[in-house]
Length: 172
Image (cartoon, rainbow, N blue to C red; front, side):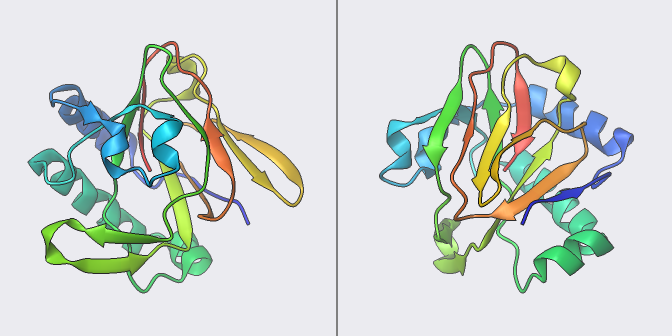
C-alpha cells in the first residue's frame, strides 16, 4: 500500500518550516538508525529533543489529524513524532526497513510503527538525486513529490534514498 497524500502542509507552512530548518544545527542521522541501518545511513538529522523539531512536529501532527485521507489510510491510534532528515553532498540511505518499535525520548514510551511516511519540504526541481525508492509486491516505486506532500507506506517495505547532490529536506 502506497498512498500519496497531497497538501499535508500549505505552501506558507512549508516556507516557514524551511526557514526554521535552515537555521538549525544538524547531527549525524545514524543516531536513530537500528543496528543494520547504521551501515547504510548517510544523512543528517535534527535532534529529536530540538525545540524546532518539537514545533514542526506539532504542526505536522495537527495537520495529519485534520487530513481525512491520512486518517482513513493510516487509522492511527498514535503517531510517532516526526524525525527530520537532511540529505546533501552525496548523502543517501541504502536499502532498509524502518524500526518496528520506536522509543520516544526520555518518556520510555514505546510505539509500534506499522506505517512510515515521508513528507517533502523540498520540491523535486530543487534537488538532484534523492529519489525515495520503495519496493513492494508490484515492483520498485520511485517517489519524488512536491513540497508539502506526503507518501505513506508499510514500514516493512524495503526502501532507500538515492544519493543527493543538491540539498533535500524531508520529515520521515
